[in-house]
Image (cartoon, rainbow, N blue to C red; front, side):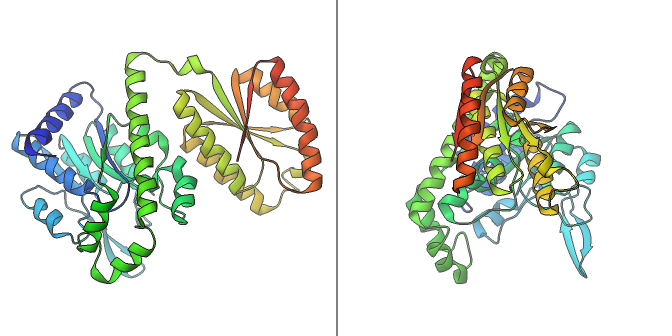
Amino acid sequence: MDTHDTRRSAEHFLNLIKESHRGKFKVYIGMSAGVGKTYRMLQEAHQLLDAGVDVRIGYIETHGRAETEALVAGLPFVPRRKLFYKGKELDEMDTQGIVNLHPEIVVVDELAHTNIEGSENPKRWQDVMQILDAGISVISAINIQHIESLNEQVQEITGVEVHERVPDSVLAMADEVVNIDLTAEDLIDRLKAGKIYKPEKIQMALNNFFRQEHILQLRELALKEVALRVEKKVENEIVNTAQLHGRILAVIDSSEKRARKVIRKTARMATHLNAGFTVLYVQSDREAPDKIPLARQRYLINNFNLAQELGGEVMRVHSNRHVDTIVEACIDRKISNVCISKPEFSLYSLIITAIRLRFLLNRLSRLNIDLTILS
């Protein structure tokens, strides 16, 4: 982006700020490390500072990249907070210090970062929400692999499960979402030139995450994600259409990964349709509180939390009438689409599932409700 375009971007962001007392939220999204998110944020910070705006650096991570470190010079910082953890002195962003100083705009890098134990909030995105609520605008950045609902897709592409994740509901709050795009060839060239990682890490990166086929797929995901966020923003500004598409029901069991996948895919579908979603767990006598294994209880709690983080409603109903309970929930919540996972591949479970599925299909078809089986 040249100086003129950066200035226009800064001016546009300033216009957004004036529209509300709550801070405005701008997010730069990239397909991977090294595409230039931090560099772009620092460029914009300089433009805003030159325009007379009170902009501060809340937290920035240069990763030792010379061109990024050069841009830090001349920008005012909010001093980091010192913490002792396992005998070591570490630093974190001083969220309360930012609120107390109350700059007009603060730059906060690494949105998906997990804070040191003992911090006020477990996650940096929660710090950002606190800063926004205080009326301070935030410019932040995230890589595509850290978006909660894309976790399985990224894992399928790269073979790596990313543990630091940001709920989609956080991105949905963004007033402006910008994609930082590079071709796969340009990104690999930057990596080989030592502009992303230190020399000893380059070959390992090329052999794993930074393989060209991975980058191409992640780039497509990033482009689609930003397009989706922009589309939803425009729709919501024109008219509130969430009610026009009804509500989606995700039916889960007490499994860990299968239920988690259904929740994420349903949340993603709800975003595309601009609809709400509900997660239903039907608890039979076999999984009563005194009978269900502790591991399964933990999976349920984690998946209920995930559903709420993604903006969904959770229903836990004790019943041995599985199909009837689903249908009742559909009527009560005005559901237009029911999402379930594909059957387990054992003879007994297939027979039971087939019988239930037939009954469920018949009941839902009478109510004009769609059924989606997720892989």
